[in-house]
Image (cartoon, rainbow, N blue to C red):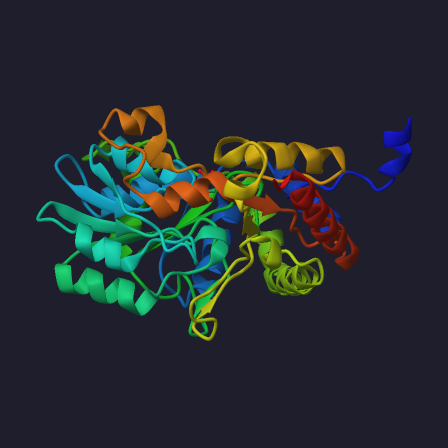
Length: 393
Ligand SMILES: *Cc1c(COP(=O)(O)O)cnc(C)c1O
């Protein structure tokens, strides 16, 4: 009884999709139109995305993972090739490299940005390296000038896993508006969603034509009745129903990004008021905030697990449980991929990537979505502070 009266505020999840009435109406129109799979809405969504990315060719796919796999195929990555990437990512990043028969090479992260350490990237380049796959964790870009300087110097492709980085910027330019192959996800938790979906920004109309074939079995049509396949593809097209959701979301992109930035500012203010850093909790950090602008896809902190009850192995779980009991949802993005059983079977072990391993044990995603209020952020910081204090040894 006491517990129930104590937590009067409704449960706050760490993310909640926001689909407005106009979007629902658009979906209804598509469903009633007689054309529900890939068609005019998908094309309109691709055109709108191309506008967003400075006119570069864009094609959509069924999800962000398929988008990255097709990007790897377009870049010609296959058996015998090495692709350098980060272990602090959604496992899809590494899995797609395996899916095309290549070898993911994990390098350590910069503990401040939690993104690929570009010194470590350079050190990991071998004669077999064909590509770099950076991930912009929580939407924060890496040093894009340095990334492309390394790629150019060593003749490497760059497949950007920008799944989380729609509307993030580097020196004012949108991620996707420049660079090599840039992959986005529109999965339900991302800043804008198509429920499931993704898109790839490419360099040339030839790459875009190949992407179209690879997403639909490799089929090439000629005339009314001609059909051929030169290279087998998969079934990765985005439906018009999903595209209608995406078009409506895209209209709100500016507002979504602005609202997330406001809430992130509130987090920094409340974190200072609650003394989070003084307790050893690490806040998000950009090395050069003038250059790298995040879209605040997530607001993540790293716990001082060494000083907490349960130690590095259990501190986070205890804290997440305690926060849940007080009505606050949290998430983990991500446990280090190189320590999953499959990747261990390829030879990866504890101790190889110490920053990634420490951050992987202590990172926690706090609630952040546009419908939240400043008072929600204040409550999260206060409860995090109290909980962390209580669980500290
Ligand atoms: C969401 C995400 C993906 C994959 O996207 P799906 O649409 O879920 O397949 C890949 N990488 C990162 C970093 C992501 O956050």
